[in-house]
Length: 169
Image (cartoon, rainbow, N blue to C red):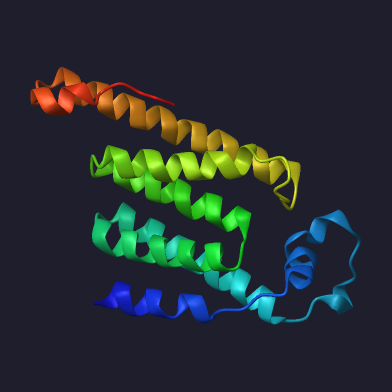
């Protein structure tokens, strides 16, 4: 119920892409402290960062259902506003969560979504360091996915599941 109610409002969010680029590409041009005001985009950025953190906290304490709800909500907002940095972050963490739950198809889908955005040269990122950190983190999660599949194959699981143990990354 909660996640459905959250998802219902996502399609009502509107975006002005020139404002998005100005806010999220802030380190590509000089700025002054007096320009540091609380804009709607800064509020949205903080909201998405907080949503991401709450999802991570729920995952850490073992509440995968709540973690998934917050991460899916944040990804839905990020997708509707076309914010690649946040889409990659939310997709990567959803992929990590799904690996933990052994939902490998969902994990692979989320991690490939993040990888596709990172590999798209036309996708603007705030800085090359941010992109590099996301790439390294994502590759770690992709490795965890492969390792999880291989470990399950070694644990003597069903024949049907064993057929899906290969890593197609």
